[in-house]
Image (tube, rainbow, N blue to C red):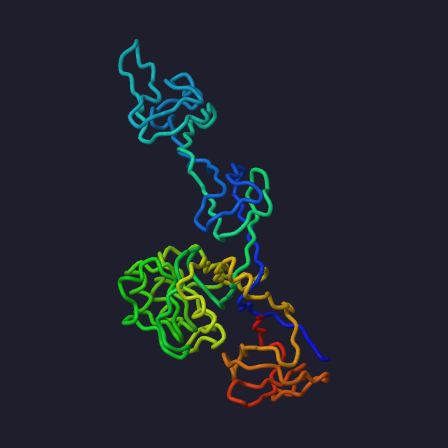
Length: 375
């Protein structure tokens, strides 16, 4: 049987998924292997070094740099509080002394007789890592973090902004073709993962942020609306650190695009269940997709079998999405995979496939212009 390989998104009712939750610096792991954890449970913590506060005492006291150590009233390792006398000159015959009162607090880290500077180190900043995924700790990495595994409904998006969020799935559109407008968002959606249909409007995003929604997910998004919400052009970079208060994810792309029916129906089947959401996206090397993870209950695990995942394999019947014009955003399935290169309208040759769209029409499309929807 003919087959080919192409990148794709995963939209599946059941998959065994693992996440690595790692500290930026060595610290303490708070859970054990085999332990069941909840998404918002702290699994590891550490402290980042506090901010460095340089003080040029030679200038402040009007003395040579080499005299600064002899003027110090506090020594390396001492805790300095705002208002403490940090250094004082000897004056003339004990008179006309000048001193320096600390304007900020911290630990005295160093004193330099070369530059006349002292360094204060501010309080360490606590860093906590949440489990993110409710499941079983399958590996503990000493002083670093853990690996968590769970059977989940797993849905990847095309693009997202904002960090990790948690909340119950709330459907607010009646069909995948319905626009997600501000009028559909109500005050009782605080903390919810709102799922729409087609394009989410800029007004809807502002309304979701206003009511305190955890996340908004829909088929499409206008780039001008995104620019207006963020206040700047996003550019090509890793997203996920935006401080909107609400995570945004689009499942299909930019513009007036309806959510894929299979994706919409999958969300609808999990309405009310609690989801873990991440808007982090990277479209260059090391591709990272935004994702929605909804853990399965014990009963659901018995009822739902995990499908065979043929990662990246195109075969006749495989569901795909066209990602370039003139059929950008259209969904269909692979009807045929011709083995010979095809001459395109540009008179160049490329390997192609025949796609059968959901309305029954067909087209010849370069294989590089489609992505697989893994189910």
